[in-house]
Length: 122
Image (cartoon, rainbow, N blue to C red; front, side, top):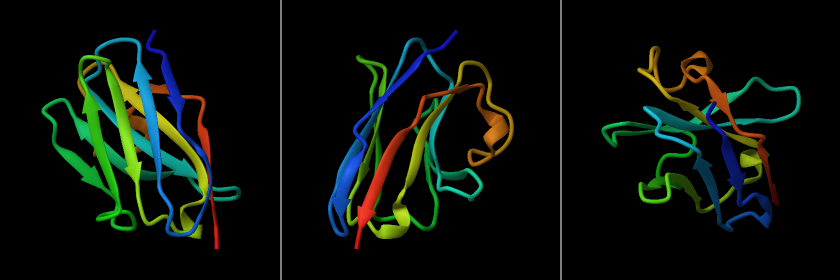
């Protein structure tokens, strides 16, 4: 069973930055970040394939950046120029085996972190 340990959430003013971390207990085939605001559907933010190919939602492209520390088996999401509409619970997701579906589809992933809250004030 894969364990995903998240950290880095918090409260910032618009224009500020945060870096989210997701440490995985084992090797993963693909990983991603999703977010969900109250009353909203879970939304894909960014994803990374085993080969390193990265995906970003249009709403965060140019502001958010994925990086990976393979030694620590940790995925990072650097979030810059944060906006109030970025406010949500952010979840790390992973799949240990071959990944079906597109990167942004929730059903692609078998394992999920506990979530870390990001709040951006105007």
